Length: 152
Image 1 (tube, rainbow, N blue to C red):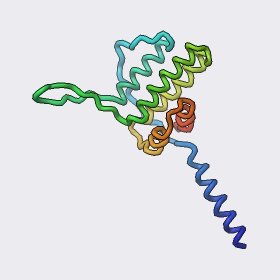
Image 2 (image 1 turned 180 degrees about the horizontal axis):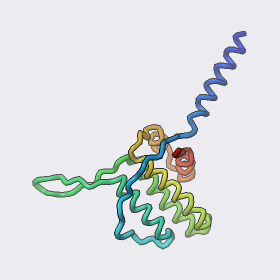
Image 3 (image 1 turned 90 degrees about the vertical axis):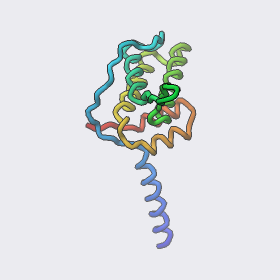
Image 4 (image 1 turned 90 degrees about the horizontal axis):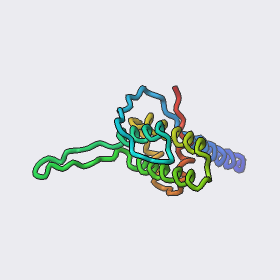
């Protein structure tokens, strides 16, 4: 009887850990910032460059430091998500440059990641940020973003 209870206990733990493999968020309406000029990038299409610029505007804001220098500083909201996306941008461009990934596949994957990130900017993403903080491999980062599901 004990063996059955212990086996059930471990199966329950394994199942609960498996259930946390997805991060589910509800889709809310999002007002995207307008972008007048995109930074040049020969590997990304104009649509994707606009999305990346919108992402950068959503996840960063300028703060005026005030007197005596009147300098502005940039605050990054959710730095783990922000810097992971920046790393993926460089990764996908390198892969397209070397011909490892087709341009369409890389752009579709990166566009999906950007859209998910823009939809969760106002959500509590503490577990995702902790997971992103623990990895530096771009393929692992893509895997973490693939766990995010947006429901309508």
